[in-house]
Image (cartoon, rainbow, N blue to C red; front, side):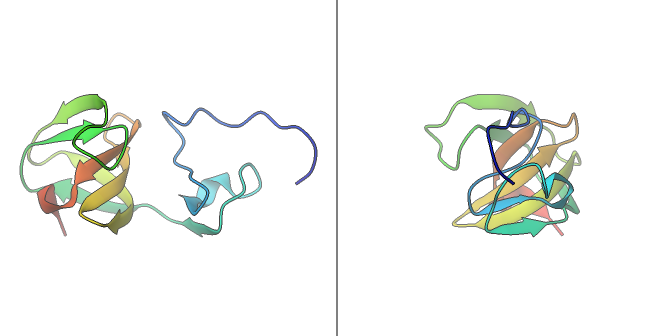
Length: 96
């Protein structure tokens, strides 16, 4: 990839410098790409914009909601909410 490019909306397209959704290969540069893994919330949680309880709240998610997980590290799961928004959720709320 070269030149100036318009990056996809980070609110609905999961990418960081270290990891991106595999569907974004060729659109964004990341160290690694991954396919989202379907998971469900075992308990209600707050979806946040970053991996911290101090990050902005995006939504409240209910137990049983679907979560398409790309990463789970340092106590936070990162991926897509059921409505397609990208968010971090406390990893303890995610079930296999």
